[in-house]
Image (tube, rainbow, N blue to C red; front, side):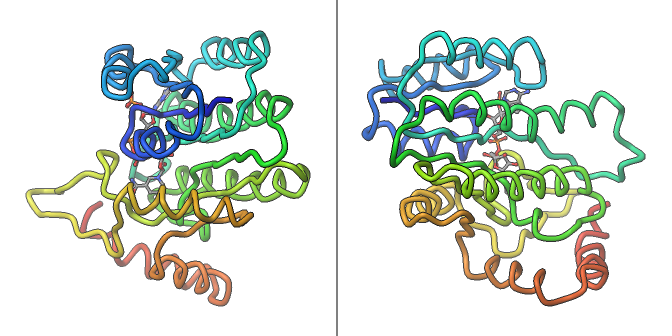
Length: 248
Ligand SMILES: NC(=O)c1ccc[n+]([C@@H]2O[C@H](COP(=O)([O-])OP(=O)(O)OC[C@H]3O[C@@H](n4cnc5c(N)ncnc54)[C@H](OP(=O)(O)O)[C@@H]3O)[C@@H](O)[C@H]2O)c1
């Protein structure tokens, strides 16, 4: 029985490694950096199976899929955690940046679900790490937000299509990881309602075991989700842009 975790070398990814390693025989840790994968193996031991792949590269993601189809492991957890973000208007993204973001945040996660599901038995779990930014459109992180909205929608449908597998879209707000810049123009950046990777992963594992298709780890972001259901998105976007203007 294994867990497959993409972005296992990142902050939230490593937290999943830490919390799932005792539940499975092996963790297939998917990452693009050989050194970081080696460090993960040093820390967590021989249960770590490093799977080196840059998920923005079509051949490399296909080779991970081929490895799964060849070895046919029994998969208890699939955690699609790898992701990238950039705050900027869409006009400032290169075509390659757009393509890479969608490949990593959406295409890789989708292919991994498709290829892993045949090897997932009853009472297994897919956790797709989306974001609270999936709940409404967010200008200046438009691409990131839209990519996470895709993941939220896809995961909830997948959960209905697969009776034996609980599929959960994990939707945290700001999480204190290296993905978030700490300062801008010499000023510390304040992230409202920020939580730790440990809190996100704890809540995600509890929620998936309760059969929930969405996991939001803090009251603050559960409230934000509620607002996104009852308030016009045009209004919410105005608040969002007002809040982030100082960092643009
Ligand atoms: N931090 C937040 O505020 C926040 C909020 C909501 C959702 N999330 C989501 O949480 C997930 C984990 O992010 P994090 O906050 O833990 O940030 P992180 O520490 O930067 O982790 C991101 C992970 O994605 C991997 N990755 C990036 N590009 C890749 C590529 N081309 N191929 C393979 N792996 C790649 C990174 O690999 P390297 O280690 O090699 O860089 C890293 O392991 C992401 O999906 C993110 O969108 C984060």
